[in-house]
Image (cartoon, rainbow, N blue to C red; front, side, top):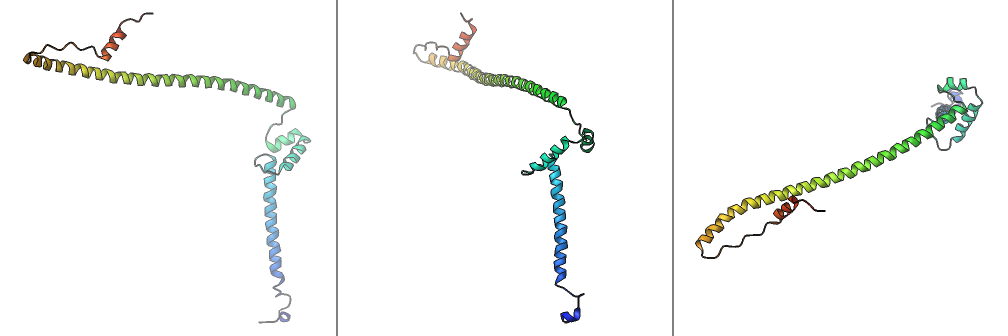
Length: 185
């Protein structure tokens, strides 16, 4: 290996890593500043929001106030409104919001009516199902009653006991008879 005196300035290894670090750091800082500037511009136009970057937005807006509207329109592609146009749009917006609130309350009322009607319909369906079950039970009892009647008659013929008194009408039959008679009052 050669000594530093023999290598001379060409082989100076101590300065080269520092210079490489400086070049890499300056490149990294340039990229970071470009990204930071881009984000601040996007924040100023409200495409991106950064918590503490209100100063950039305020600076842009204060600069835009003093610019020619045609220049702003050409840069942003948006139409610049006059104060009267802005106020008329704001009043139209408030009217539209009031109308929407009215319609929303009407929709809520209709929805509550529909919900109430659907609940009543479900209750009536349940009642109908229960009545169908009761009717089916009564019909089954009626079918069973005539089958039992001949057996009782046969038992009565063989035994000298007096015939049993007639049974009272079933509860369902009494309810059906009461429903058939017209209600007074």
